[in-house]
Image (cartoon, rainbow, N blue to C red):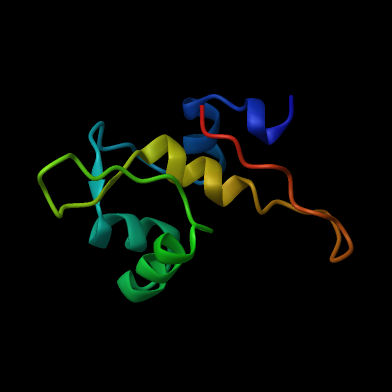
Length: 90
C-alpha cells in the first residue's frame, strides 16, 4: 500500500494522532502540522499546502483532519534524492 492509498486510521496511527472527528480551524491545523498560522496561510495563498474549505459567505477557513495527515504523509521519503509522492486528497 502506498501512502496515497492509506486509510485515515492508518494515517492517525502513523502520526500518533487522536482524531477530533470534526473540521479543524487554522490554529488547530497549524498546530497539528507543527507550523505557524502565518506559514499555513502562506501555503494556502501560494496553493502549496493542504486542501482547505471556506464556506460561502464566510471568511473562516477549515481543514479536514484526513487532508492534513495525507499532506504530511505526502512528504515521506527514504533518501534526500527521493521525489515526494503526488498528494491526492481522498
